[in-house]
Length: 270
Image 1 (cartoon, helix red, strand yellow):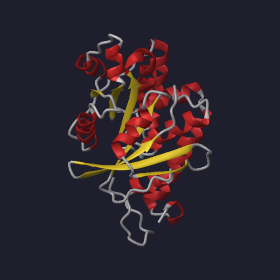
Image 2 (cartoon, helix red, strand yellow):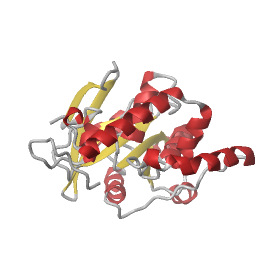
Image 3 (cartoon, one colour):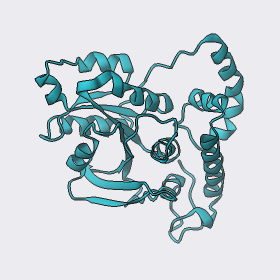
Image 4 (cartoon, one colour):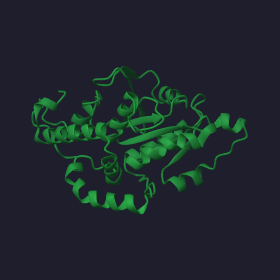
C-alpha cells in the first residue's frame, strides 16, 4: 500500500499502519510484519504465543471492548514480527464479543498472515474455525499443536496430505517443548514475505446460493478496494446472511480507509 498519511509529523505513515492502529496495534517500524494468532480455546494457543515471543509481550484491551488483547514480538531471519493474540473462539460468526474481535481483526486489521492453532487430538472439531479463516483470507498457516499428545494416543496425522488438501502450509508442533516452532517460523516468514502463496480451494455453494453470490460480486469491488486480502465471495455471503455487525464493521472500515488514504488527521494515532 503506497498511500501515506500527509497529516503525520513524519509524513510517512502508511495506510496499513494507520488502519492497524485502530486496533491498538502499534508497529515499531513499517518493516515489522503483523501476524494474527487464532484458535479454539484450550488448544495451546497461549503456549504457542509465549514460546514465540518470550518476555517481549504487552497486554491491554481491544478498543471499546472488555476483551483482553496480548501482543508480542519476535525476530526471525532478522525480520521483526508483531504477533497479535486473538481471543480463543470456536467460530467467526460473531455471536460474542470475542468472536467479533477475532473476526474484525482478521478482516480489517490487515494482518500479513494468520496462524490458526488447532489441537492434534481433535482435529475434525478444530478444523471448523480453520476453514472459516481460510474462507476469509488465504494467507494462513495451520499450526497443528499438541502433536506429542496425539502421538501418545496413537493418532497419526499426515501433515503433508493435510496441507495439500487445504492449500495452506501445515506445521506440527508441541509448543511446550519447542518442537516444530522453528519450522513454524520458517513457513510464517515465507507467507508474510510473499515467498509462499497459500491457495485454499474455494468453498462450493449450491447453485442457488452461488447465483446470488455471483450477482453481488460486481458491486463489491469499490467497497473492498481497501481490503485486497478479503475474499469477496465470503463478504457476499455475509451480505446475504444479513450479518449486521459485520456490515457495521465493514462500513466503518471503508470510511476509515477513505479518510486514511486522504491523510485525515482524525484517524492517525500519531
